[in-house]
Length: 463
Image (cartoon, rainbow, N blue to C red):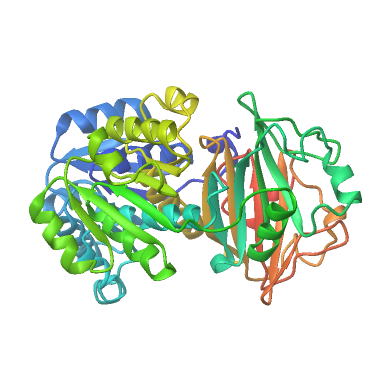
């Protein structure tokens, strides 16, 4: 990992309101990238814990208070991020900040009513971003159900380029093959392998890399190219036809809204009868069952053995994990596990949980991408950022605005940093998996994958 503080210029002055899970994740990530962080929270113990862990400042109080924001330094702040548990408080914090300071503002908003009006609220309140963790998590789950073979599906260039992660089965044709040999046999076209995890170790593979059973492999391609590759190598590429969701909260609602228009049958099991009535009214095409989703008899009665996908979305991580393990035991369903906490991540990774979705990481990645773009120079901008393999690898999409050191130069003539792959160039609607003779041009979107961290400009790829 790069020592960001020694190699990067001074960062931004950022105020984070709310020291919950997302606030703590943002504090960890942004302090690592040399930004000056000030926390605001009503709970002094939460502030003290994060201040001691990450060497940041803290102010105890109401984040929407003028006096508290002044004490936190709002007049000199570049950005305020409001991630408390209250949507209204987050919006009010940002409104006060915009009136008092000369800073950008980001609000976390989770209520469906507000989310449907996010464009209007963002424009009228002058916010840089409104982010909804449950909606973002639902979109990630939906992408996985459209391509159930994958452990992860990350998209770039507005969905036209995909970074797909999958586990290599023992009997697959890729086992014991090198990347170079596959290229000669035209097993794949317009596909670039960009990262492999084996035995806990991450490799950015070269042509002589030889695949082994149980490798966790990530590759980049166009949407069509990725499906063609998976089909050629023996993977199932059809979307699921049915899903069972346990828990009827906001994430379940957002997920059902994504899946139903795609023709996927949705069954939601929810314990609260009042919430079942609400879901029946707003999701008339879904089947809503009132009952205890952790009851084995009920799950068997409702057909867990035959459903094609299973998504536990309760608010309790332990329940989600146990439900996933039960589903894997009694069915062949594609399982996706939502985890809110990051404690015991090593243990979680050793369990057979299928795809795991962390809503707060999705939120943090989106905000960090914005922060890096705000810090970057004008010749490029970060469009999208994903952390992979427990944040040991970053996949970044840059928008190349202007000519610079990296443009109009053949890639083979560039002095690129080690442990970095230039994976894809998206130009005028076309996806290019670059060779040594290809060049980056102004107007391109460029995707890189690297084990370095803290890149905020396309020129960071150079030695």
